[in-house]
Image 1 (cartoon, rainbow, N blue to C red):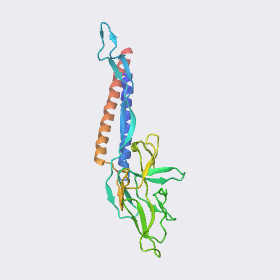
Image 2 (cartoon, rainbow, N blue to C red):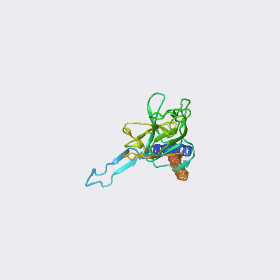
Image 3 (cartoon, rainbow, N blue to C red):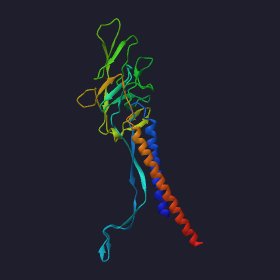
Length: 263
């Protein structure tokens, strides 16, 4: 019975982590560029009463006798499916049609990656994120520039009064992708960081031969969270938690009966 208590408790703990993951997905259902996560479980070590294939005179045990000791949270898998596009009409809103990430420079000098394309201009005219992190490579818009356009291939142009009538090229947006984007580490602020699991970034201009994707100006990529699916997962987690809690109660009742017999 003690074993059943700990086994069921492990199931309750795992479902609590599952519900925490669902809650985070739902909380970010309106966060631009958010990638939902799915919790993965794995069974824990088994207690071998009879090892399968062991010699049992006069014959060999075909199935054995193994008792599992519960489950645990193994990993949170990041789902990289494309989110829907939302037309905003804002000049500096960008959506990536493809697998790429925008590159930004953090205050400590490190490079971070994001799918959220809601960019702004700071007081220097540099294109930055909502947190003030400049896009990499940095692109600065002159204060008198008008009619800013960003092509699907990342070319940033603007009309500058007093200069040529043709739009002036201000820079080119560069994207990055990874061999294993699911291995990126989420650090908050819609940002990801490179890890040993993700591999090194592969950089290219939008529309390049690497298949990194193209840009859509005036659009934002919505979160890829499916609210209905998350509610279904929430109900399943609740039922699994409830089932494990009943096992704890039954095991406790059985243990109480044993204690009563001793007395």
